[in-house]
Image (cartoon, rainbow, N blue to C red):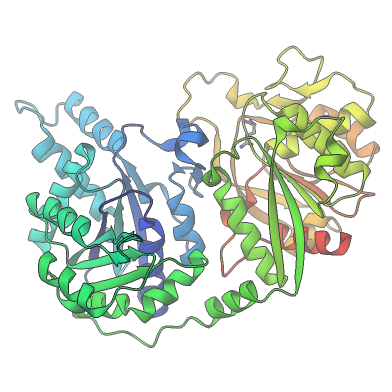
Length: 534
Ligand code: GLN
């Protein structure tokens, strides 16, 4: 069958959850036997979000092939359990970069290069790249931002053209909108949606389906009104009521028959009833926990919830496996010092020191590591968190009181965390870290080996610094071992402390590979250790 395309636009307001709606629809189509993928188009001019501060953009999600991408790709992977790639995230920056490179190469020789057709053609080329691989029955493209934004205009025009070229049985436009509730009037209001659809119509795009975010159920008369004034059939008005957890949304969409409506419009018949047993089992465990633990998440970007999105989701997956409610306590590393560490961290059953960049907050992270190590509280260090664990061990146990990471103290006499060799000559910032999936060989009998039940794994990276192997012997003699090493380069990827119930630091980002159907083994074992500690 030829690939079908779905475009998801947003109206009225940002943050309505286009990523979750797209992922939920893809999940239902996958559960009915279709192969689906989702791609995100971001209308900003950065080439990728890798150079954006987490305060601006939340977490930067890294794919196996080393793309630094929008955090929505994390939702796509967590829902579909299928990896994404470079092609799944496109920005206006990338589109312009390609067009300008072609212009310089003389590909448009003699022509004026313009938004229409050159930019829109490049957008269209990217819309269909994944479809053309032949791997997918359905490709969902989520358009970032809100209809009416100046910067989304070329995308809307490209959608108009594709919809016209492919027709209604191969291309659909879903508009996600907000139905606000006015508590004084006790009424749900459809007018903002009518305006937002009018805005789309001004650009020549008629949405086929409306997905309506709402705090209260929308009754038949509201559905009729929306259908009449937005030119859609009544069954294409889909309610998306606020959910307790994002993982409820696929089932809510199933109830609203979003998947059935889509398949009908595409004139496709479902291969079988939706297979969602594993998903429902996960939800059952998530909602009926038998245990409860408090886990400290020590980071410095806590002002923005989305900065640690994948870590928070990985805890949800690992909690469900263990039938354990994981209360994540966000603690600002700048507020921790050697003097108050007991008081701040005293009620925790496990401590995770988060990834990060730069020197701010590192001291608090090192005090945290020392406390977890000495008090034998389960400890999980990720990337910068692992590097802090190494520095703390060197300072406390190797008698290298001035040991540091070169990132924090460029003049240290003992750079136990050093800049990677290949990084030393790099001056460009964008896309130049050690990025993407690398193999790692695990040592038998270690915590890591026990968690993965395998001796060769692959995990995703995003860093410039690494464990300085010149010190490895000294560390191992004192009880901190390298339990995972890159088989090609010898880089230390995992460290552990032997005489501790659970002390593991990883140079990679395990949180990026945790999904509902494959919770990450290190997170699962960390929660187990926290339950034992409790
Ligand atoms: N800043 C550290 C490095 O670049 C750690 C990066 C991270 O935590 N992702 O090596």
